[in-house]
Amino acid sequence: MKRYLIFVAVGPALGGFALLLVTTYMSGYWTKTDPGEVAKLFKVFVTSLQYSYLFGFLPALMMCAIDDILFHVRRIAPVMRMLIVGGIAFVLAGFNYASHGSEYGALQWILYGLVGFIPATVSSWLVHNFVDEQLPDASPARPSEHGA
Image (cartoon, rainbow, N blue to C red):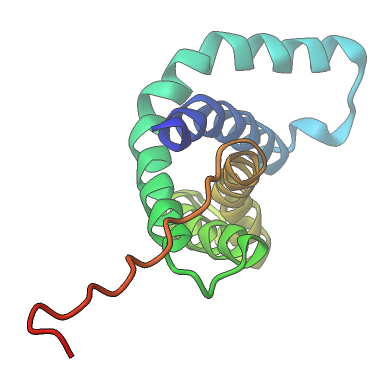
């Protein structure tokens, strides 16, 4: 349960901030940056945070479910699990966001893919460092009922 809480608490906020940065960059806003414009960026982030959680809640739960499934596969190391979850989130976010603009290209696809990769990987890393428990060992073999 803690795994899901971490993904839902951290994922939408990081994803929303990453999406704001990418859309700001793609619109050409970052050509000249001064402290006033950076303050506007953070003001927009704070005012849009509720929508980040509204629309990021279900994707965060989906990535957490994948992370939870991969946690139970013993052969997958934690770092590989983080990269797999991040890679899946990268592809899904790239398909979701990159085709909705006037421009379409590799840079746009990579930047929008990072919107999914960053929160999924960071959430998986936080879960690994603070929540992961040992998997239960296989149950011991029962003695046969007929006696041997």
